[in-house]
Length: 154
Image (spheres, rainbow, N blue to C red):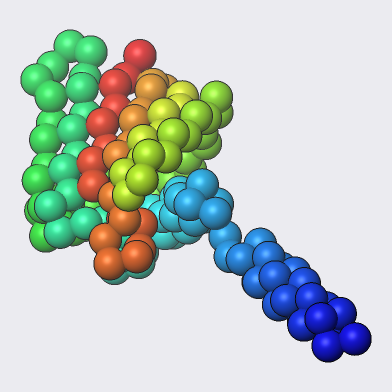
């Protein structure tokens, strides 16, 4: 009878452990939540919120079809770039399609097609940019951060 009780207790502990482990969001889910939340912060022009998803050594590169690439390195430089952009643009919307995500240990990479639409504050003209984007992520002290965004325009 004692053996049965011990086995029952062990099975209960194992099944509870499995249930609790299953409740934690997977790395993929955590990264997709960062994508969703950082996009929402960007669309709402919430610089501080957006910056919170970036690593200290964050890098942003935009490869334009007929001009030199635009490159921003560091959180503070990105903060300044966003402040400048948000003065020029309003009604910002970002849509991602054809998404892919690969996680390997404490690093990850995602890729997608995107469409960015916005309205010029001065002229009221609607702008639309389409292209491809890749993002690199790194888990820092147990938290996923965006380390690099690189995009190309069509």
